[in-house]
Image (cartoon, rainbow, N blue to C red; front, side, top):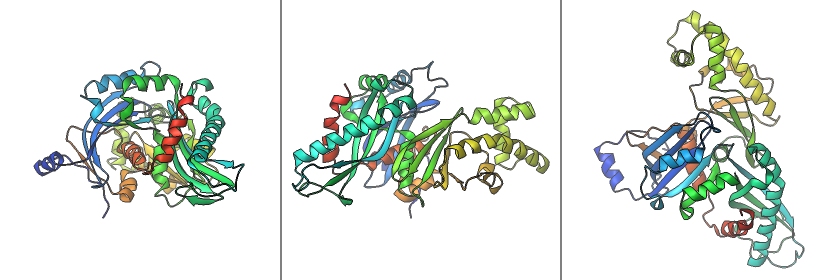
Length: 405
């Protein structure tokens, strides 16, 4: 049976951890309202993760607190970074990861593909992909297009004349379709990453929401869905439609808006509002208050519903919701979801959805308490999705050096 096990270490587990032969990792998450550094050990063979330590710093205002400086202050508390494999998982403000494909027509289709030809095809595909997405990425991250840097390229698959091929060398083909995942950073962020971390230890740079979409694309019943990350001040929406995975858009709605609505109606400060929501979720209220409170929530949640509907195309049926605050359970009720004009179904994104498929057992040291286990698992899963035979991705990354100067 596949399951998630989250618990503190007892003596037996401590001994198990001592003799555990997994690799050492650091996950650096730079998200909407905090920076988190997590130290853990993991073994894909044993399907086990030991979370040993995590350090968190709230960042209420990105402009006022340079996020890489915050990360640096956390990392100085960890000795010898060179003994760790390092994963960087970024908010959509700082990184853009896109899964898509580029098609090419070979001029000499009767000749077999050799390594030099493959290298040239990959080079062309990278440039087309980069050139096609650079302006849109710049607008999303609010930077000039000349400051868009391609930081990570992975080749996820190749089709020759519409047929999937593991290794195209030795085959003839007219049309070649190369499936990529590419991560773009702002030049300033890329420079900061280089100064902050040993380059050879960075195994993956990814946009958090797209990593979540990719994990779900492997387990979801439908291949056309949205993922919504709900932050204190906004909701970031990611799209998985037709094999293309990417950030779709964001809109202004989050915990702060819900608490402000409660203040208008009940005249309570944010902390009291948070306690009321928690009491409501635990059914620790009277029936009279419950009905009144739900009516207030439904009015405020209508803004959330409009935001999702404005972004969802007709073919999208499900929206996976990952909330960074205590979301009222009425969000997932028929009473709320019947208000949608489109046929959308909201699904609470739990860690179980990921671990039931991939089967990792997760154990915590008692002092380690992650802000959001789902984003952690998505980033780690993304690293495990990397192609095992990475020769083509190595060719790709060798070709992007002239795009990162």
